[in-house]
Image (cartoon, rainbow, N blue to C red; front, side, top):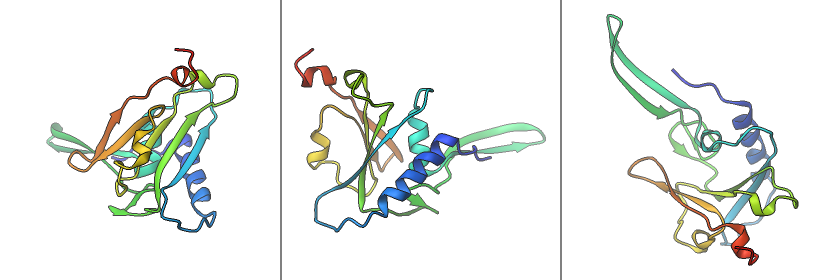
Length: 157
């Protein structure tokens, strides 16, 4: 059983596909896409991960109406993977803002997702004002490095 893609996942994926086609020349520096998701509802991490890798699915094993096991996995048809194969590997990270404006910059909670094929040990990992999601190849999920508040950057904390 596969969870349906949400409207937010579809919108994020559409924007990513549009931004990757902008024709920037490869210069040896990380190519990062930044998105500001504007919507009234809270932006859940699963919405972003679903756009990057596809929605979650559950495999249920049953016999005569009794559930023997249930296992969650992902339907790999997202921006960074399709049919289990890497894609868009030139885009090394995605920075996501939620309802970012100049009026609430200090309250924003930006998130940076690193592509599974990128090297997150480079300079992007050292940006302390982003919650950083580093792909873990052993668990096939993200490890999270928490962010410092923007208020400390501006000397308000």
